[in-house]
Length: 60
Image (cartoon, rainbow, N blue to C red; front, top):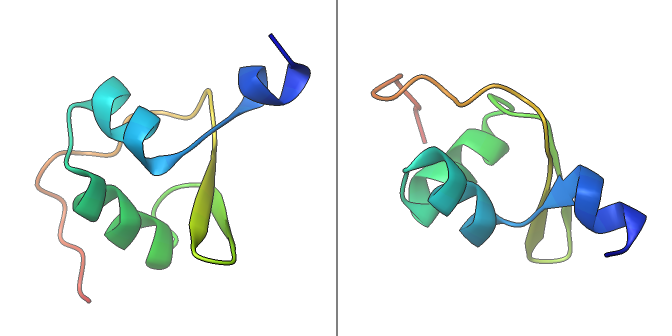
């Protein structure tokens, strides 16, 4: 396993890990509610951060 796979994840992996929908994860990324950067169309999310609070308001 590469070192990057140990420290970053994509939207799909985050959704499975946190039990949230991929669309909701993307909204959280866009609103800077989780530590992530966008490269092209892809969100890169830092592993090891706390699961976002379920039901927290995200205004799009």
